[in-house]
Length: 376
Image (cartoon, rainbow, N blue to C red; front, side, top):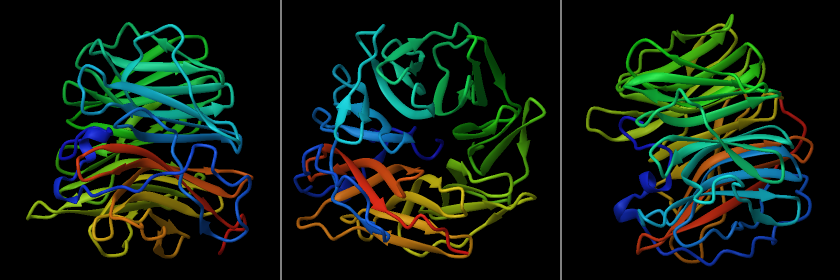
């Protein structure tokens, strides 16, 4: 991010907004099944070590959900990446078999299936970190063409294929891998950084980010990544994208005004062009987006005017409206950095962290039960 640090817990500390956090229930306290109507369920935690935060979540199925993040965010010597897995009953931390030191931090995770998973982030050795999972554990993957200074922020996966995006030498970077172990690096023209990526198939996908002053969207078409036209929005940036079909997609981020204050930004794809949507007002930050492939989208973030409540936006193709969790018993700031829809379960899972008055982080997992039936 150019005006906001990369997708990590350390970047999301908001000084005067750090408030006392409530105690979270145990990691097995989630209901066995979601309610029929749209409603928040009790929050829980993966119980990461001190100062833990979850930055991304991906659902392969209702009983196979993966989240990644960071532990000990304030300790440069102890800080390390975290991978945790939900099996339908409990959250369990999962290790990296061939790298006992683990990642420095993990920013993004993707699931092509329950046995084909990818995570990206940053290694203790200064190199970008890629890890492949088989459903039981992860292994670090070495890409010889990556070097110190390269940065990876997002990953997407399809069967026998993965795409990671980021930056090299101030230019957008795309890393493509196949099941056969072949790797291709593409450095795009122009300045910028890519943060989020989504695949619709072997040769169709989108990636989003910013140029340092405006939103940036690139498209995979005909085997090549190319910059795509977007509305001219000075101060705009994009952090995540979700594809809901060839004619439906949503990209989210923010926009800075002349005073330097950030507000929410949502762009919608209709199969022909990207258009800007009007979100609800408020001091809102947006981080992640998901959808149910029926025209409904959920966006994760934080409303800094009501920081103690879990916060999502819901878009049904017509309007954007907020969904708020219960008010906290004691003050807190909760940031939901990523969100995933679980097909069949009718459940939205969103992850992030709670921050207390001393700047301490606690990872948090929220669930929203939804109606499976899409509304027109």
